[in-house]
Length: 244
Image 1 (cartoon, rainbow, N blue to C red):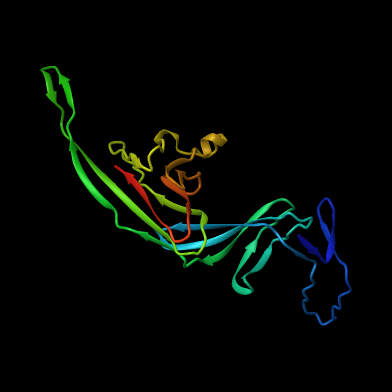
Image 2: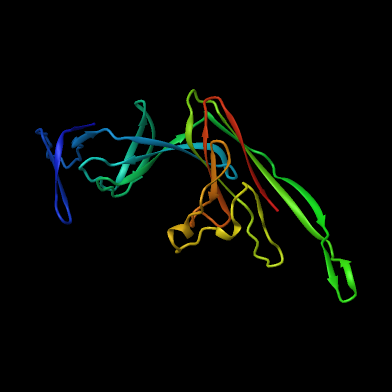
């Protein structure tokens, strides 16, 4: 629902905003704010956390401009329940386009990023040589397990919590990194920058109830993995990132 105070006339390269009521603008060289429209939009909240860098969970909202107005680039003030939260900036937003606004830290979502657990093992594989059957030299493998615990202390469910983490990327051809958890991630199908849509986005896997995981899109970083979690009120979940 939108309560409009004015209208907009669109040109090819410009837009003219008209206000419906008279407004007094003193000739004192100062700036004045004039209400053009008061608009209500559907807001989709999202929560984001990169626990390797910061265990805080940041709340942001995705807004679709469903009005006839074009939003011009500039600074915006963000309020929640009439309380000032922060200042942000938006870019040029035409009708039917969407944009995001940060809403600060959500203290009701608590993330614990535990130290990495490591376990080494020696693998011996049989083989054949010119002298016949014999064991090949042992190969050392180090298993790494990273656990991320998230608790939702809110009185309502959180439907879209994004968690981002990374696995090491080897630049040595003699060292190979295999992801063992989340299960189902295909090493050969990491996103490719500049490729087709299917090559840029890995298919989601579902390692546990209410959790989706995939390789993060290009541009976020090589070896990046993202989860999208749905957590009920008062519930706690644990994510595992494993590699060897």
